[in-house]
Length: 290
Image (cartoon, rainbow, N blue to C red; front, side, top):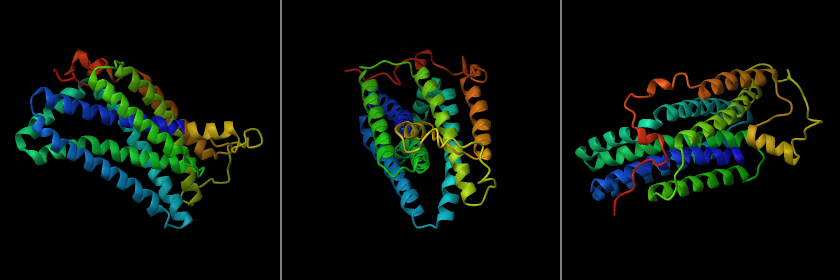
């Protein structure tokens, strides 16, 4: 439940910040008439994300067991790739996200209503599709048959919306750079578990070898049905009897990706290059003046 809460919070907050920046800019520049197409684009993006999630969930139920495992494993790996790219992209571009969105909005305003709808749709739609895919992969990996993963996602999204409203109103200040660094690091750990489980799915589908070659088996020590076993599985996708290939892939992903993400090397080059000092701070955009 916690890992899915983190996914909903992180992904939802990114989308919420984008919406806050767009709305605040339009209000400040006296273009309230453009708010309707912006909300239309956002609504279409949300509907598409929900439809995509439904297709993944209900469409996979019609497949054979082998096909389900092959699909689940493949989509889990794709989800990990997208989320990894997203956390690195957000850390690199967070400093100038506002100016980038302002530039796109200026161009869309000149082009008309359709361009505004498309701008909002693309800005929010990408986050929505990534969230749907990663949530589906995470819920599929949890596989406990309870609604807790979905409850966690819903709570995370609700928290993100609340934070976005508080940011917009100027009632909350938080260091977004540190927030995205810490949540991004935790999301890399979650992604490593999803990747390992995806590899296990592909092994069960006979697309990868080594299903019976276990790295260790501590099922007699950590009961998967116990509260702590459920907690470990829910947060880290922990498995008490992983295969050698699962452990190898988990380590090969987690160690270098987490080290690179937490290292300042490679991110320092963005300093002083189109950055705006106030965008390292707490609010994504200035609230409209009354």
